[in-house]
Length: 115
Length: 113
Image (cartoon, rainbow over all chains, first blue to last red; front, side, top):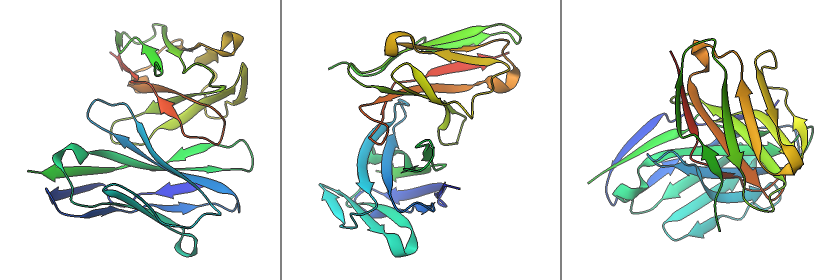
């Protein structure tokens, strides 16, 4: 069975602090894809990143960075120098390539960045 | 380029009444998803279409929910009859392919009273 766990329900940080959102996944497949989405207060989920299981290189995009470690089945997301506009709910998701390619989301982490 | 369009944005109905949601995906996206999102939870897949074919509807409560995607473009999701527990946000998303990033609409917030 596939599963995505985001153990952090809510995180509060002060602006300019760095923050890491954890994501742990479970799958028996060797080929799979991992995603991060942002859901601001407006409600529309916004795609942030997609990684496949064969590419473990960390990725940096501006203030965002992602650390993918197959050994620990984790795909963590770090925001450097957080800003108030980063306040949102962040979801980690998984697609495995066996079966029906089911898109599975975690329960999300609510990030509050305080001015 | 226009994003995924859903309507209505909000709907309030009495229990046992029918309700329908409409979704217009991004042009050229073959994959279309309907998700249900309860407060404080992640999206849960209801049904996935590849063109006009429903390839995964295992999570759709077929006794009261139905969906269609005519001509592989627009899609509708229907609930009949609605129950109090159906109150949630219904999200539509589309993707260029079944393994790609999904583009979401703003959702329809359903309240059943």
